[in-house]
Length: 276
Length: 347
Image (cartoon, rainbow over all chains, first blue to last red; front, side, top):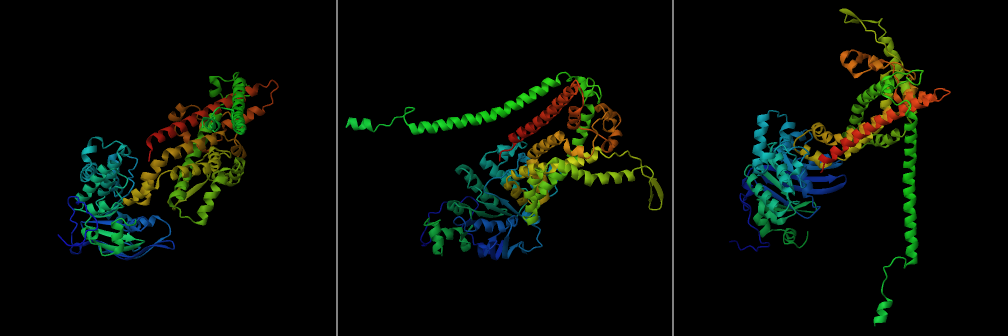
């Protein structure tokens, strides 16, 4: 046992997450270099540099308005949808700068999927929700879609609950089921990276638990970046934690280190609940 | 001790507070005034409908629907008006739905916020308020020359040389000035702003989270609009379109400007029953270019007929009853569409 002072009692991690992982040894899935972001004249991200290792979970924490969600959305260019946004710096995915103007955002978003805070099932059947991504990409063969829908629902731990009613409206599912459906829907586009924007913040503890365990399972095959307000959650599900404050990346490191021996005073204050 | 308690006791009994009594009186008077205003207009409407129905009784018979115009009020019918209005509305819908919904999709989903787009958005509601007679003049000056040039092209004497290989004689089409086509084009102008505004509102009611989620799954903007936004907005769009179409059925002024028949004893394309449409579908080609009349135009004409015994009043009243019934049916359809939509959409 280390002699470092323990600033927070860290809860046990979910299965499949090693919080002492030496992330520098992993090949990187995302490499952000000197990223700054502006809404019009207002700068919201200052010179962010962050490596996200492959097949791991990176948690972004920080108080409201610190820029972590904005940062997450730059990773699949969802901020493009907002008028008057501007970005400098580089963000390398698969060795390509995704900020470059010749990047096709449709191809990028297939590779970098996203799950939102509010579950947003389409007003269609469960099957059609999961099959939507492959269908817009041109897949029409029924048997392929059937197999894909089943495997994605299994991966999202939803198959057993919905296998007998795949063609009923997705809107009729419970909140937790809807969110797992959204994860299944994202998996169906076969992404390598999944961005999650507070995926469990609107769910009850039992559903949250299921989502967290699911993240632990998924990180064996996917790279996950998750924004969360819940620090217990960050400490449970992530290999690496990044602390954002006022648009700056204050500190990033293995989750165990951030939660037990942060090097920055601001990180320690936030984690111990002195502000935020 | 007990005496002082009694003095400070609060009374909740009615009428204790004179100021409050006056305030309550005001409130009650206001309620009665609002109630009177509501029911008086309803009552007047009821009286009007009742009197129209009453005066129509002497002509309201099945043969009123199947007879043509006649100088004899006892045999005069609205058949030509029904078919004329039917084709007019069909063609108007065919023009205004794609253009209107397309414009709404562009303005809501695609256009960036430039001064031109803002100008269009603001002026749409102004356009919806423009008197329909103005659109009639517009149709007359803009579409009638088009008709005239079509007439010269399809007069049956013109021969086209196709690439120097063979010569083709352009078929002869009977094209009339006040045709269904130009009427529908003019009527489309009248209802386009309404269709666009209704469609815009339906599109705006779709939560943006649906669009964002679709885009995040690698859908293009076109796929997002076509597969998510429009299907979700369709009930709202359909309601708006149906109500706009019902306005087109009731309008007389714009099509009178372009010169429809008032005294008509023919139906467009010679189609007088739905069966004839199936028996001889080639007649459909002639429909858009044929002359026509419409229900409100006929009603207007009947009400102007000089008749010493006032017998055409009953004909006009019967026409109004038929027109109102059609409008009622259309509005009922809109309500059904809306009710169905409400059942499926909970975000």
